[in-house]
Image (cartoon, rainbow, N blue to C red):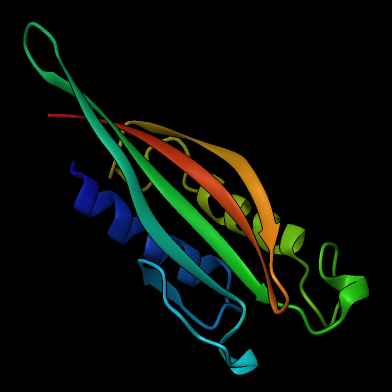
Length: 137
C-alpha cells in the first residue's frame, strides 16, 4: 500500500466508472476547448505517518476535482440527460469510488470522501472532493 498505488487506482476506478468523462489526469491541466470536458484531475493534498509499536499508519489526502464546461447555464449545477451538471459529476465520482469501499481494491485499508467546495469562472464550473485514504506499512 502506497500513495502512488492509491492515486493510480483512483484514476482507474473513475475512468471505468464515469465513462462520459473526457479524461482523468494527474495534476491540473489547462484547456479552453469545450470538447475536452467534462474532466477530472487528481491532486495530492497531504501524506502523514504515525509510528505505532509494530507498524506505521499513514493517511493520504487526495483532491479529486471534477470540471464541466458551462454549455447551458440552466443546467450547470443539476444537469439532465444531455448535459451533466457539476453535482451530477460529483455524484458519479463518489458512486464509482464507493463501489470499491472499504479498501479500493486492496490499495488502502479504508477511505472517506468529502465535498469541500464548488466554484466557477466564466466558462467552467468545478467541484472539489477530498479523499482521505488510510494505509499501513
